[in-house]
Image (cartoon, rainbow over all chains, first blue to last red; front, side, top):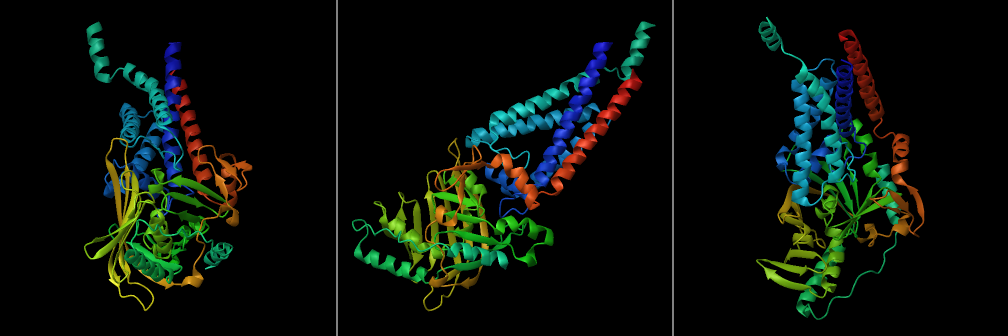
Length: 164
Length: 325
């Protein structure tokens, strides 16, 4: 019982860590104080970086940049919302794995990757990006475990019937 | 504009250096040398140039800005007030203070105190602004001609109705028509990383000035590790605002000491003076500087909001846990 409570606490703080991480990434990108000309703001700078990385087609870089930012904001708030669904957890894990896969793809393609996940283009290597995303994905693990250990109403009902 | 005049003042600190190399006598015939001298003279008459560039193939960012280009490729970027809202103008105050020099092999970009160096092979050169003056290289053409012609592998050949000067060693290719109109400029190593600019739609030139184009197509290419060439293409409508003549021309060499610019090591963040003394570490003080200059002013508030939301979520989640217990 006590370990269950501990798991729930760890799960709660895992969700908060990842949720706050997503929101921080969105804020850092959006409020970039040093946009790279001709980009005029952080989101255009991020789009320009995506363009140069050569994976996303040029005409899609700005929509993709906005999509990444939107998904970070939505997932961030959804993870911080008390009692959020497991669907949100899976979405967050999927997005983090997607970011890692993208970083690996860029690295394979170009031999280097500058992530720009947190706005300003910092010399974050592939190892830093992968380590950060792995830690954040792992932080969602307890929340997913807690979710799967809960019985759905249907399973609870069939369990009661079996006991009878 | 005050920023422009401030720049002019800083750039005026520099004096013309006699850095022009001699033509490589063995590789270029006398006839070609004469043609090259004519081109150099025509473009030397352009001096400093001011243009307005409008991105035409892609309206997503509506990039409209003015460039002042000096003879060494140093340029100042200005965002016209009419095309930028008030908020953007203040954000671009940083851009107005920037000095960006690109000599075809190394990009040096910085503020009036600090600059970074980016070798052409660094793919971040594509992210930075090296392509900007390539849209209007007219003041730089004499320097490029001299540098290419001085290289041991320099050659001039006819290509269609244009003459082409090329040196792989110097990383320069220039193409021009008989009337002096510059049709093509390539900078860098075509096997690794390069800019390729083609010019079209020429306006008739004045008496001493060659025809200048109204369209510039800038291709930036970089070979990735798996061998594929990554290319981004931008097309700009060019409006020439002012040709300031030789007397308006700026420096011919980027001289960090004359500009009192300190070099920043991008890896460590160390800022080093021209005489090699470490002054400070930029990473340690950048947050303080940004706050002092008012950049990213909303960022701390939004980050505080994120922290507050996370604390509220933790508190609400903890209460739910206790109630469930």
